Length: 134
Image (cartoon, rainbow, N blue to C red):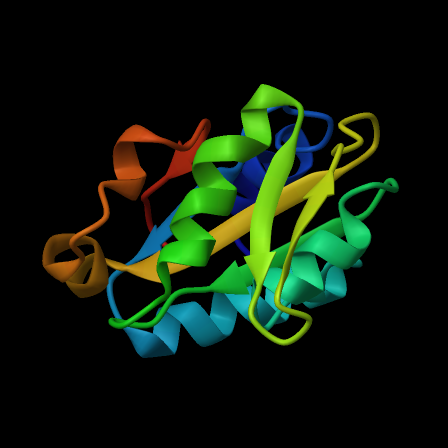
């Protein structure tokens, strides 16, 4: 495991913004995912997963694909405000949660190509960002 990456992940705990790890490619994403899981992080598949657990101390990560949803972007933007409101397309109603920041960490993992192609400017909306040798 890369010690700089581990330090970055540890420093992301209790931050009031979502942290971002930018990789070169899919192989590096898999290495980062393995490291996060070894450090006790749980993978969220979508915003609904994130909404369920942000109101308690938790360590979660999500990997972004080229076509990630606007809901994920909205979550990233709203998280630092202290209240996240996302429309649940299954229950057909809005869900609002208050994130717990103490002992919590949310990390977004994405490759450089997705950052370049996305229509959502996530780089401007996150807190700590790691881009280095993985």
